[in-house]
Length: 342
View 1 (cartoon, rainbow, N blue to C red):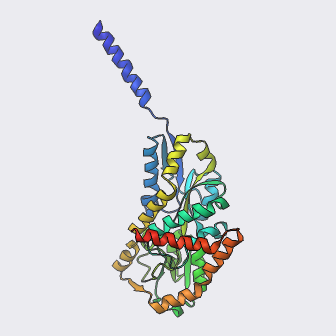
View 2 (view 1 turned 180 degrees about the vertical axis):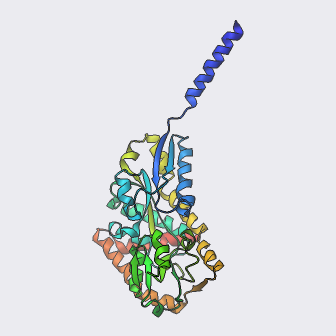
View 3 (view 1 turned 30 degrees about the horizontal axis):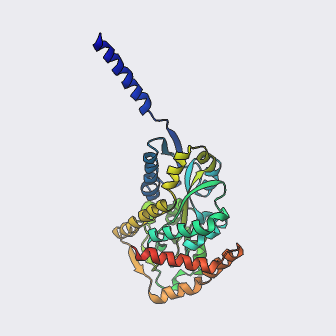
């Protein structure tokens, strides 16, 4: 009799543990407009998603959708409208909506994406968040990709005159402005269209960071790369979440997400870009391509043609009622401090 009672109690305790150990799970959808194997998904978005699941003890699960909900340009509005809970955007695709992010993508800003990403986040959070450029979504982080490079199919780019007449695919934003300043015929298209544009001869080259030639499988089309110290340009991305979906989460889960976002997320994203920085060069070289380094005269010529970008940015910030020159100097100081700590 005692044995039967103990067995029954044991069964009840076990069942109770089963109920208590079950977790009410909320699934959040994530849309990415690059392939699942792209480093943005593999090394930035999914590791963060896994950390969120861990931090919430399994209450939140972020699921990558098998197909993007819309084109690259449409992802801001898609997340805002709830077609996906989470996504990432390239600011260069709609630059008029995010003028203050330009501080982090100016020519020759730096070779280290981690440093640039953290510096950009700090300055943006400190000074520009109040402008609400990402209205309608919950901003999770901002980061920059690695230094921008010129990749071409035929022509070697060793001096300013070599840009004349070239048709170059760019994302938009700073890359487009730099290209126009250098005399390039700019073709603004999303990154996933690069292979078709190059293969068909519509463009003679692309502006991309170091990993993208490998990520978009361009290594057999590209024959030359020209690097600039500090990068010819950069681009910034934002990871965003549907604001209503975020607001409906329990406070503890909101706090868990934000603790892993902001600067820690920007740092991790920058580190991922740095880790993958040479993959495009390696892939191109394996297919007979060559890398060239811009000399001092070439760099000086580019700086002369792009010098007004900083001045224009300062004016834009001043127009918002802030001190543009002071904020730009503060950003440069952040770059220097972070760089010294590396």
